[in-house]
Image (cartoon, rainbow, N blue to C red; front, side, top):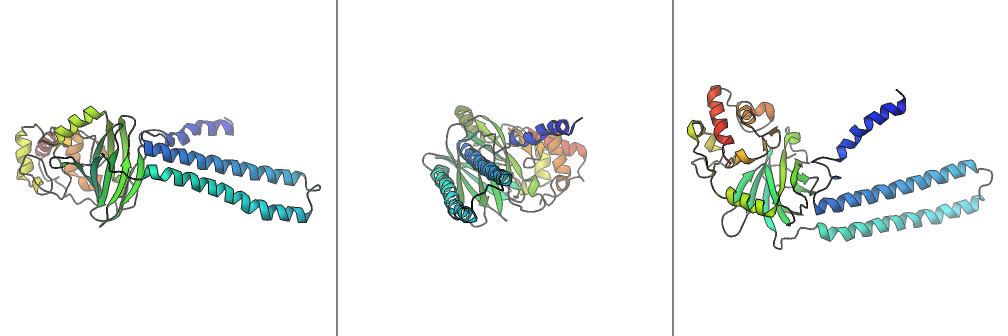
Length: 322
Ligand code: CUA
């Protein structure tokens, strides 16, 4: 096959980074729309300037004999250089400044979601008035077409919050509160990531962002505010007996730990282990047995010493919490 043919076969793989559920160029939110448009403005301006410079260079090389006098060329470079650069940079700066007010967080009438980064997962609290916040972890749900105010904090080191398809990103800094607003305009499941190196499992600190129709979202949030309807069976007894509740909280039970992720409605989430495995009983059982293998540096100890049927029963209980 020709060299061109070989490159042409590779092209789709180059482009697949630009689409999908975690791409800043395949947008589903108004903040991401604004930044991806700015990206294309910058890229096309850069490409235009590059082509113009290369064109002038080729022209100059072809017409060496008939070039202007040294004096005229010197004057052209002296004046055209600074003026052209100033005009282009000023235009781009004006455009970016004009975009900024729309990217600033606004809290007027917005749903407030508090997200706290911690090695290597995310605490999530949905603030609603009246009533206490609904607590969750490692997944963010938001209504399509309604602005959401994200209140971002960190428990330990610097993390950074980014949902490329919806907008962002924003650092999460210990001792400081940062705010970000997002408006999803297309229902779907989008990938979210930590974008600041925060330790061994930084690359495994992810989450799903689920944009839902507003009435679906209201129903979901109302269900999150109550304990999951799950009798529990032997898995629940084992969960409590082995002390899982000293680190994890499950609404409506004696499990009140705040060290690890809240598991109140774990069964309804997209992933297990903060975005590393699709949610299933198998995945939950695997995480209980070998958390340190799946997520190096995690504070959760391994429970591989438990009999496999006990691990399975606990996984069944947790998957049933919807
Ligand atoms: Cu948290 Cu990187």
